[in-house]
Image (tube, rainbow, N blue to C red; front, side, top):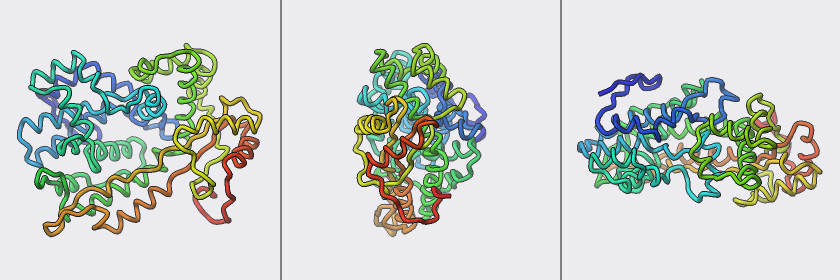
Length: 395
């Protein structure tokens, strides 16, 4: 057994299969991928890695496996899945995933190729586990897999408290130990009892507050869109292989952007020196005649650039997916009846609405083009002028 000191959870004990997996190059690569991508441009302390988060998820999986009374075999599989669940992440974590997934047609949880690699497959098979079985657990394809990837899971618990710790934003703190204490298996189904409802509410409240403050902070969104635009140019204009980019770490990505020259090198330098694009438009759905459909962002950005008379590479349209609130579906046992969390908690229902209200569409450009791009964006997107009111965005 090896003890690893973690700044969030204290000592993490690791042995057996997971200790063997720890040295696999696919897992060690996560040391060089930042958990929060470019959030350090806003929160300088946010330099923690996917490797740390994987260890934290593993630690919580150990606690929850013991709490649920899993046998040694199932407990081992769940702990290994928690440790491996993020090995499919591309450089800068979620920064590159949306762009690369459009070319590769898969997300970071689809990692069968990595699980079948010799370094991981042989370690799994030594303990009687197939890559296919591990993939199902990581994607939450079984009831036990929902411990790793479900409406309320150890992945989410760890990243909220870890991201809060490193950013210094206290909103991510919630009673995760109480939440796990009130979780159990009933009929093979993972759920909480009535004593865990308040802890589940606090988790959702934490995520709601972290969303605009950290995960969707406008500086993070702008820098992420800049990198995505540079990578799209590298793939479509220079012929870079998206699969090769996916396997890079953060350092290799910026080295590739610099070596590509041109627009990609310019963006890399802008990120390095924090000379970022600025918001020309930043509005909620209520201010738009229509919310752009997925896949239409580039066409609309080109239309706005043409209207404004600006090089299309310097106009970026950011229309993120609508916020999801899966926690509301988590099952709760109340007086021997199984209900969804949103059915027993009016707080959850209010928080679900509040989550959706955090959505913002952004149009970003160079500082010198800001005014004319704003006017062009308002015309192209049919932006409605809201009545004067005091909101956070207007202050």
